[in-house]
Length: 102
Image 1: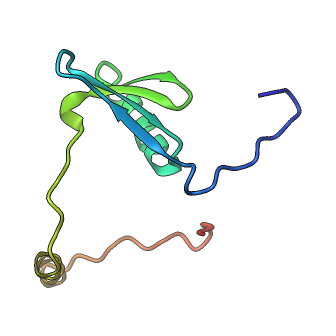
Image 2: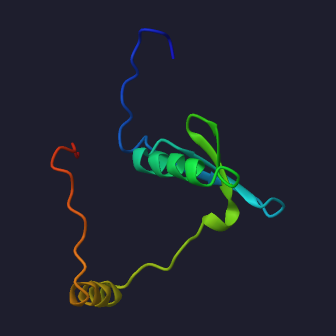
């Protein structure tokens, strides 16, 4: 980036995440422009500096076991989980009123 110039913010479509791994290595490379994921990865580098490293501004190395694909929730399963949480007294965190959302 040229000094004095500001870059145009990326659109939500452009805030992509790419995860690369292979069968030979125990780590995965995560390249992301997703602001929430960037913050999470930065927190993980501080907490688990031996396992999670930041290679570049938007690129991290994580243990491959941290990458998972889960079965989607059915509507019935989602409703049952919601009901159990309500019965247990769980209330979701409130969104920060000062946060700008699109």
